[in-house]
Length: 157
Image 1: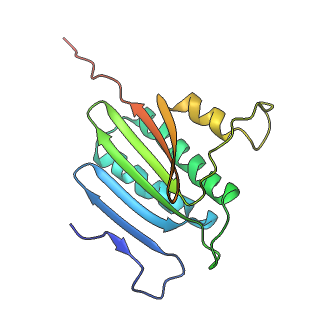
Image 2: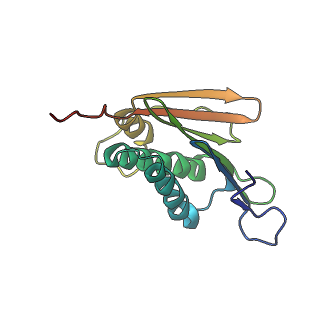
């Protein structure tokens, strides 16, 4: 299947590529605050399409938004002023995973902050919402991975 969106060949203000196939969404894009809503919409549609329950979908949308906001706040723009990131969302047998890739090799730092603070709570939020999480430094930056299990179907007699 070809890309859903590919602006590399166009004179577009935002660089984006997107591919979706077999329970997997793979996107690469210039992270801009004004585009986070669109990314959330794309993720939400895929989670509904894959029949992920509303509670898990809501948690995943919050986590993806937080991770992309962290890219905006904590990575350095490239020479063209872009903060490129990737998002890989996958439906797996027991849930859904997401990996956010960015070009900054510095791992996130867990800070103990006031619960009412407006910033610095990203990792605390991530750990509270995800069933499992991990960070890997890569040759080109880092990957932040999350897993959320889906509830087992309830049988009615």
